[in-house]
Image (cartoon, rainbow, N blue to C red):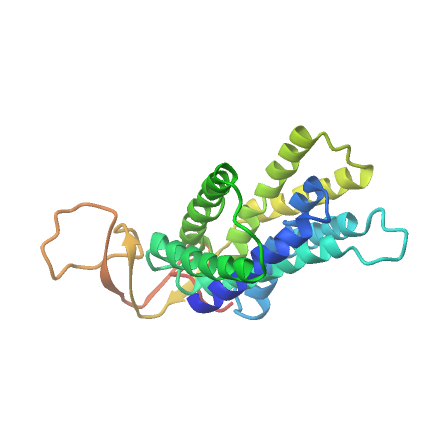
Length: 277
């Protein structure tokens, strides 16, 4: 799972994004990145059978409508919008990445981020040098490294933690609030003057995100026996004894076993709720 995430999301995704940014206004590109949440939810629903209810599905349609409006506005020459298509391709790569990473989200998120960033970064750097691209000057290099540490490193650690607690579809939906901030910053920094279509697309995407984040899911469900390890507190899903001296500190991490359990409460498709409906 992790190897696939490194290749698809760590190598191909960023390359497609850079190609798309070179051909697309920053504000439009920022909102197009909302496609990642839609594709993440679609793959989680169709391929991995994660629950996606009517509210989440309608939100996906609203985000898709906004993305289509952004992609095709102003294209009157009959040419394909290659920049928008490249960004959409990057979103598809990251959607696959998100669903693959979900399967290892119980592991150490810092270790996962370090492996993905270290391996993918080394391969991408080697490709760039092989193609004859020189290293940038020291100051831009340091600035880019700092940006990558925050935007890819810290962001990925928090994203893995969210995958653990929310599942791929919901995490992708919550994450899709970021492009709205990106679009706003691009308008302020670059003085762009977006068209009416931009604002209509933004409204559709905002509606889709709101439908996602305001969802509530509850029903009676059965937990099968499960053994795994992750940081946890002794909540209703972690009522176990310890076969080692424990000082009572929480949260803590150790291998533990979940006994079969039947109950009902609001929940997300997290690492303890990957049941069928």
